[in-house]
Length: 135
Image (cartoon, rainbow, N blue to C red; front, side, top):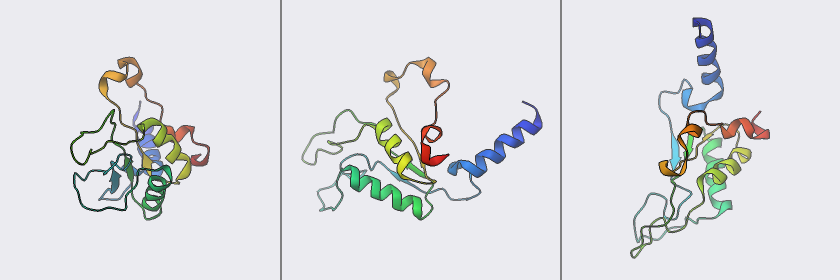
């Protein structure tokens, strides 16, 4: 890659990928694909692990300019009296669904390292490039 190619890639990233934008402070929503999100608590909550609820949260975050929606990959919860993260959406499917439902926010998917072959980690395919509403 010569200097002009590097500059073109940087300009594309700033224009199309929220985490490369000119915003100095990047904002995101984290762990909303799991029950209790990131709160280990007995406090009452209105949060529900449903497609409609998580989709609405990410749509609102997108509308107000948040940059990232990052799920937590879980195979099972932590148990105990709260069963923290006992219910969850699988991250790749969740992210793909949200990519078609949102406009700008970067929707990521997380994975457990042993479940992905090293050769496939070399060149991941962004979900954004496969979502027809994001072209």
